[in-house]
Picture 1 (cartoon, rainbow, N blue to C red):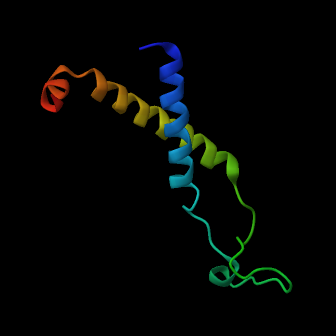
Picture 2 (cartoon, rainbow, N blue to C red):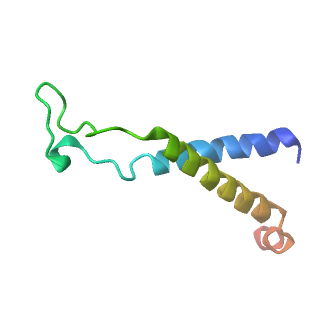
Picture 3 (cartoon, rainbow, N blue to C red):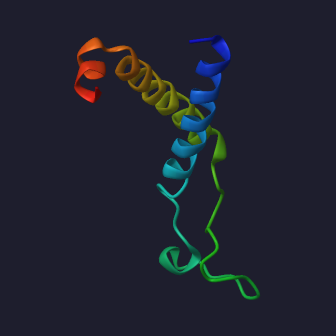
Length: 82
């Protein structure tokens, strides 16, 4: 495979992992008991920490990409799918 293929697989895996990681540890205003008048009750309460989620997403996407590339290059798996 070419290097562009690796980047494309990583790019797709990164976005899938981002949408997987985003809802973790997010509490809305009702759950936190901090509802602010004039805001949506389902809005996140407190500070939304985005950088740790990006770091977790990047590491998780690297692992997923590695597993996908390993699976695509494994001879016994290729024989199974033939």
